Length: 134
Image 1: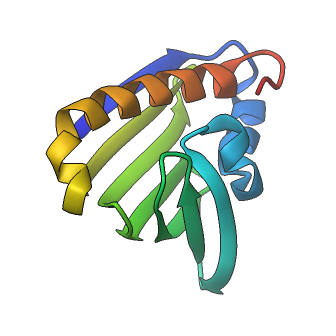
Image 2: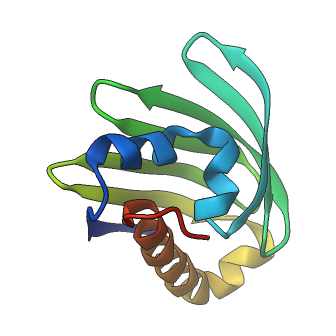
């Protein structure tokens, strides 16, 4: 599954980047992520355990590029694997997904794409808003 969603910023870009890059707040904005627990670091890469709201858990390697205001989440295990990027640039916040579903989740991949896309739109709305919203 590959797709990209964009939302025009209502808040200041620096504030939106602060929200995007605050790993402990990912569940606040990305409601499909129930919890994200940082379990280690290897240089600029953070290793985390993730529990998903739809069931299942996995692991991810996360990196931040402060200069580019780019967050990259590489899901290495769980119901899906692949990459999500979130970038704050040009007066907008952009999220892109490139993941493959595994096991039973492949059987409903069409539904999953719609669900992921809708969740991404809502997360970007929360991230880009003038006030912190949950």
